[in-house]
Amino acid sequence: MSGVVLEARCPAKINLWLRVLGRRRDGYHELATIFQAIDLWDDLRIEADSGLHLACDDPGLPVDRSNLVLAAAELLRSRHPGRQLGARLTLTKRIPVRAGLGGGSSDGAAALLLCRRFWDLPLSDAELADLAARLGADVPFFLAGGTARGTGRGDRIEPQPFAGEKPILLGLPPFGISTAEVFSRLGARLTLPRNGVSLPVLSAHKWPVENDFRSAVNDLEGVVFELRHELARFRDALLREGARSALLSGSGSAVYGVFADDRARDLVADRLRDRFQGWRLVGTRTVQGAAHVVTASE
Ligand code: C5P
Image (cartoon, rainbow, N blue to C red; front, side, top):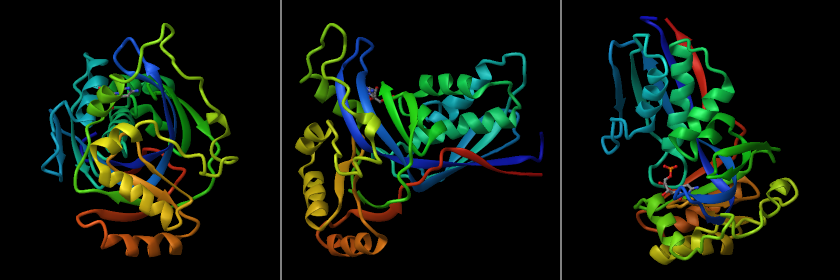
């Protein structure tokens, strides 16, 4: 395969709806969530190498096995011990980290797709989805993309109807949040019921066409807003300025608003910029895409 270069694109996600149903015996939490891909992408490239290496343009990110890109490549390689599988992977980051936007998970899903193609591995999509769930709870969503319901740890994915591209304003504060810390603080407040599930699964199946983005809820907001009051202030400002809904994405730190049109979104961004110093406000939209391989060139 020498000389061949493949590239993949890796979308960010927001959670349109997120309920925590209880604590599980494996230490994770039982979730019901609606994932939505948005038009904000990392790029990943693969080319031939005798070893297995990762380079990244963000010097703050690890390039060892704690990066899901390398973890994904290692996982695939370990299943084919008889073959000499090497690659040089190069990651270009645009999705902010520790923001609840799933960037690292999306990169991991893209790495599975790229390595399968580059190494010509006989793996079905279902097998790849199983490997994705082993990498992290959010990884399987990025193989499906668009709008999808996630249950279990968030890793059991069922595609949902896409409600069309909606304008989104992302508020990115100048700090990130640790998902593990949020769940551990929340866990201290939850009792562990015998069946592992403490609330009924609400009507996620009606999302989003009937609910039209208005029934947004995220059970992680309580814990996160206590830690970082400015995130609640930003959510409230979005709603006051006319967002149709506004919510923390995942465990944060990103807070997003859904708007009726691009103009309304951009006007609100201009008004809020001065009041939220140090924040980055990014206009984007919901999209139907998933992590995917885009080019093959010699
Ligand atoms: O799967 P991932 O590594 O992204 O999850 C990060 C951390 O978030 C986990 O180690 C766990 O502490 C917490 N988590 C959880 N329940 C979930 C997903 C994540 O408790 N469903």
